[in-house]
Length: 187
Ligand SMILES: C[S@@+](CC[C@H](N)C(=O)[O-])C[C@H]1O[C@@H](n2cnc3c(N)ncnc32)[C@H](O)[C@@H]1O
Image (cartoon, rainbow, N blue to C red; front, side):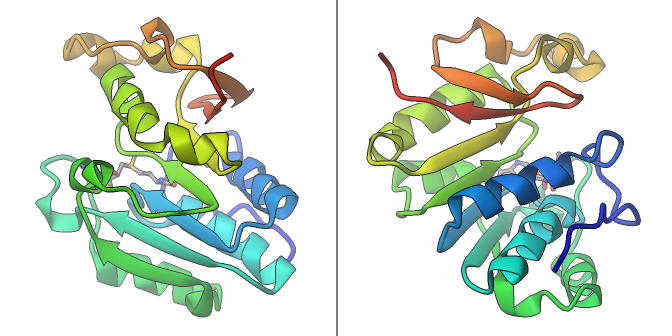
C-alpha cells in the first residue's frame, strides 16, 4: 500500500507526518518482526503496517497498557477498528503488555518502536535491555530526542530527566516535533 498520512487517527505524529518517516524506515530495513510499545489509537502502528503491506511480508506485535494506563489511552477495540479500516489486520497483533515488564526479558525483534511517554530514564532502561540486539543489527527507534521534545510542558512539570541529558548513543533521525530517534552502537 502506498503511504497516506492516517490523519483521522489522533496522534502527535500527525502534524509533521512522522508516519511517513516510520513508513520509510520499515521500507528501508524490511523487518520481519516489528515490536511496538505505545499504540494509543494506532497511528504509528497503521503507518508501519502500510509499509509491511507494500513489502508484502512481516508482522507487528503492538503492545500497550490500554485501560491500565492512568493518562491518555485507548482500548484494543478502538485500535483494531482503525487497523481494520485500512485492511491491515493481517500485519498486526495487538497485545496488552507492560513495557517495564518486557524490558526484564526482551524478546528478539528486527525493529522496535517505543512511544510510551518517553523520558530520559525510559531511554536508559531501553538501551540497557536492547543494546546486544542493536549490536547484532536490530533497529530501535523511539519517540523524542530533540531539544524541543525534551522541553514540552509535562516534562518540565514532572521534572522528568531529559532524553538529551542521558549518555545513551542515539541519533535524531527526524527532528520535526515530536521527533524520532534511533539508538546507535556505543563507540
Ligand atoms: C504517546 S502515546 C503513543 C502514541 C502512538 N505511538 C501514536 O502513534 O500516536 C503513549 C502510549 O503509551 C502507553 N503506555 C504508557 N506506558 C506504558 C507501559 N509501561 N507499557 C505499555 N504501554 C504504555 C499509553 O497507554 C499510551 O497509549
